[in-house]
Image 1 (cartoon, rainbow, N blue to C red):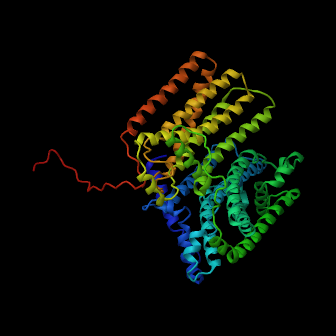
Image 2: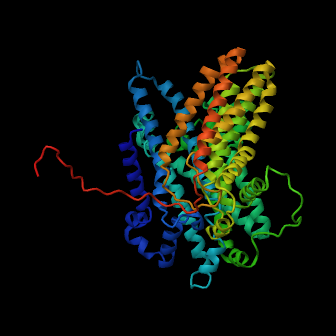
Image 3: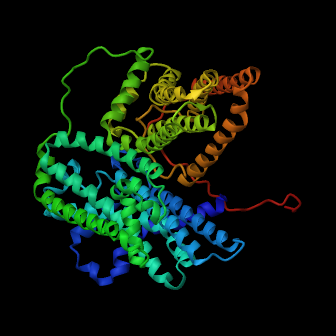
Length: 591
């Protein structure tokens, strides 16, 4: 994407996020003035506290960070709408009414499924945001603020972020699709589309609030926090897996088929598709039960969430203040598996404990691993459908390469979030060894926690492919590519994992998104054009493996040269802007 266009999108979305705090006033005018002042103040503060403030740099800009995520959704919706318009204009002949009706099921189902996927990931990202934490209780408890006001402000801020995602993802598609498919009732179809996507997002948020609220009321806090962490990781796996595996039924006949009835009845994507069709007046009579299930699920989740929140505002806040969040370990310091030298072992176990105990790190890492597991589930689905050994082809090479890149990239991204900035002094005063030793330990973390798990999964999948020799050759190349990904991820990395402050907005998320897309295309090109032909010839395979290994060695040498002169840093700071007056000296001018 052009840099000027990307900056324009970032500026526009940044303005949108900055106006989010004033949106209620602009939309409802004086009605907002009737809300309690403490609620309005807390809403504005909680809105920019989606991430833990203790993990952020002192010069962090959360507005810019949220704007970059919104920009990706805005651009994605615009590209989809542009594709629809061009596809309609370039169609060789006008579509008949039957063709338009059949196309509408697939288009509207895809719209609902994308909304469920994005809203589900946003809701899981906001897993703890709708409820007060210990800091909120300690700071706001002594003040004359009602507990229900605190809970209401937290829920409103989380709902505002989810609403921003809904608008950004559908701002173009929910107007273009009805214009193409609606015919004489375009306005009704447009309103039905907005109703369906809003209902789907509301259902997911209300389900989260109900589950979290009831769990916090019925369970001790330590048990609740542990089960909540497991549920959060499970939800990250559920939404991508369901999007790739369950969203394939796009016609009334297929949805009413007996073999698909159980899937259609259990997955919310089909409920809200039927709700959309009912609101648009296009739902067959035999499918009204499915729309009724969508309305019932939405109403039940909202009522249950409201009840849980009302009970939490009275009983949960004292529990947060009185009950500890962590439970002392029962096993003590026993023998540990060595991961190299003493420094490497300590850094590996420090990273592992951080990922196990810290929720914010699990959230970031789960985004990458959700895609990894989605690819793995897609391979399992293809494996079961084949019902026998398959020939080594792109179905094995491309997904495993993408899984390796996602695992290493996700682990490298989570390194930027610290455990707590106030603990950095301990790591600073104990830096007694050369800096290069710490980078070796960082490589060990990436190797054990990212490359090794993906390689093991690929080894299991390779058992379903024949012949054995090409499958083994791919595992060898995959391991070398994993080492190459480690070296690429450590270019310019001069800090310990989980110890440096986080500076939102330093890395432009739009560039990261499109860079990842280009990287995926390069992996696809490498697997199809280079590796598949090389697996059929011993000489070609030796050349390919040798060149890839040489790239690893060269990049390792280059990184090692830099690491011997580098210094570890623990505070992210933005680059100082260079301001010039724009004056130019004319060499031909006379003084």
